Image 1 (cartoon, rainbow, N blue to C red):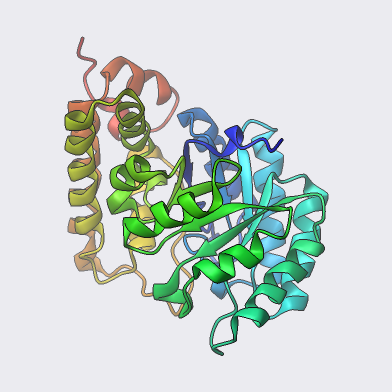
Image 2: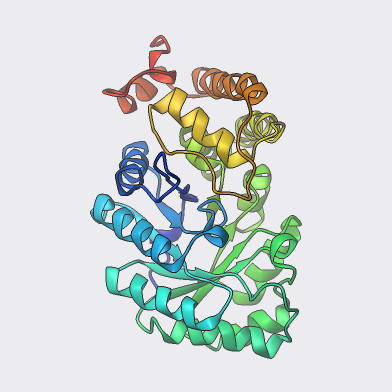
Amino acid sequence: MRNLDKYKGVIPAFYACYDKDGNISPEAVQALTKYFVEKGVKGVYVNGSSGECIYQSVEDRKIVLENVMKAAEGKLTVIAHVACNNTKDSQELAKHAESLGVDAIAAIPPIYFHLPEYAIAKYWNDISAAAPNTDFVIYNIPQLAGVALTQSLFAEMRKNPNVIGVKNSSMPVQDIQMFKQAAGPDYIIFNGPDEQFMSGRVIGAEGAIGGTYGVMPELYLKLDDYVKAGEMEKAREIQYACDEIIYKMCSAHGNMYAVIKAILKINEGLELGGVREPLPALIDADMNIVKEAAQMICDAKKKFISRNIVAQRNIGRKKGCRDLPILI
């Protein structure tokens, strides 16, 4: 029987961590990992879209995963995204991930060339074969990959016993329903789009992997608690607040992940660097947006979450939301 419980919950997508020269910073990777452990999330999704994988070398991605595993110390479920633009490099990362003891590997479909479904299935199965003792998660993100996971392709992939489910980042929540109904209880579907966390969970996603969870994990953890408790009015209120923060972060000239890293520096004292080109960096005019979004997160925590819990989780950090007054 599969152990799917370790995947059920809030799993932030891990951010790329750079030093002042734009190289991977092992120290920052470990600091971000420890931050996630402290926040109490279920796990992390490493080297995916939020990790800027498309702009990193195979060696970069190995360094990231090695330092995540070192700092996590078995306290987080770790899913490593290993897809590259070719099968050979993807298999190398899959083997490396399995050697480190990750819980699962994941992969988007091949990009650029529009391949037939049988070629996509072979690509995924070849990657899975390189890590034969590790769970495999299909990453469906058609708006970026240029190809969508169809029901026929999903059925073909379920012939592989290592396939445990789908990280579904397509926008229609109906896709989650259809994948869940087709696969049944022995598979897990992860909600991908952060703006529909609540909707995805309600319609059948038992886990969630998202790019903005890391900048406001307390809010998504509380949102998930309300969904599980059936308190939908409270859940919807937090979802709306999270969405407004996302809209604010997306309004900058710089890439959203540059905004997120700047917010984490303000609110959590984390130094994660910028983003790797060609992703656009922040400009001076963006700092007002960064500060506004950072304050929106603090205000939402103050409104929706017990302040003593927030304060306890932020003991020892430099400044930011931990300076909120403790209200009983």
